[in-house]
Amino acid sequence: MATLPLRILIIDDSEVARQYLMQLFAADPECQVLAAVGTAREGVDLALRRHPDVITMDVRLPDQDGFEATRTIMEIAPTPIVIVTSLADGGDVGVTFAALSAGALACLPKPRGGPAAGVEAAALQLVRTVKAMAGVKVVRRRPRRAGMETTTLNRDALSDSRTATSTGFPAPRREPLEIVAIGGSTGAPPVIQTLLATLPESFPVPLLIVQHITEGFLAGMVTWLNQSSHLVVHVAADGDRVEPGHAYLAPTDQHLEYTRLGRLRLTSAPLEYGMRPAASVLFRSVAASCGPRGCGVILTGMGRDGAAELKLIRDQGGVTIAQDATTSVVHGMPGEAIRLLAAKHVLPPAKIVDLLVALTIQP
Image 1 (cartoon, rainbow, N blue to C red):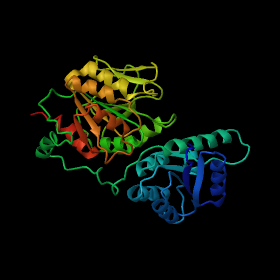
Image 2: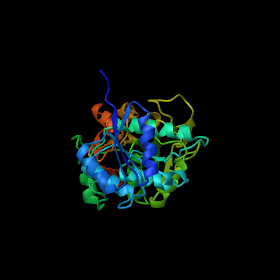
Image 3: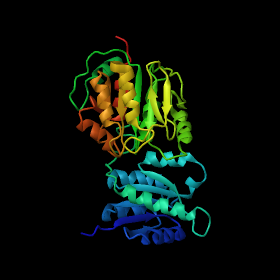
């Protein structure tokens, strides 16, 4: 039985760009251009009425920028969206993270026509990415900030948050936390930003983060996070001794581990779940090194990376948290953790912050 071609909606104010993208997708038998329009209003209307499989979205549109149009579509007609813009070709990684914050799954530079070196590779990468993102099951986003807003942190509310979990698991008294390990993939950078921007500067536990991210964007992500975070954000280095109030992101193409000596170890061990760095490696090391003093948090993302290894942390008596389906762009990783009973708490980002702070309050 033949597979139906992917129905693609192109939103770009440039007629030249629209024609080029149409030709690009028309050359792939697995793709079909549903429509190509030049305004956000037309694009949002078509997304609602014709339900494309995937959308390419420019940023510069005459009636509304592409970030706002993306937010609108994700609120009323959730659809995989790839931002395709010339702004992403100028080294401004802020554009990429603004796109992800709006709900897009990826942000790529607009390929140029002509015989210039690298043009063909960029065009093929665009087509591959659009086809891959079309297969992502996205969820409806609440209006901006809903589900992501911070809550007033007070001792009574935080005490309540210890048991406010959708899994129904009780939260027993426990030893103080030593490490919070976080793993995320598609859709996770804005969630990580929310967590780091909301945790207090006095948060007494180091955070270790594995984020699946395109090569070349890690340094930009660290800069972007430091602009809003109360904590100090670094790219992890081999042998680093972790410090309270600091967050460490795994480097590109290296696994991140936590050791019993309170130091970080980077390795080039084989890929796990097709990833390096992989959350699985980090979670496994935290389970082995921290026991009940460890905490693992698994955020929105495709695949199964880290789900089974989160269960190791729980089995050692540690705290385990999965992002809920409502606020996840893709509920693959956290959904698998929930299925395996690895997640003791299933929470939206604001409640994750509440719980982490509650667990660091001394009785």
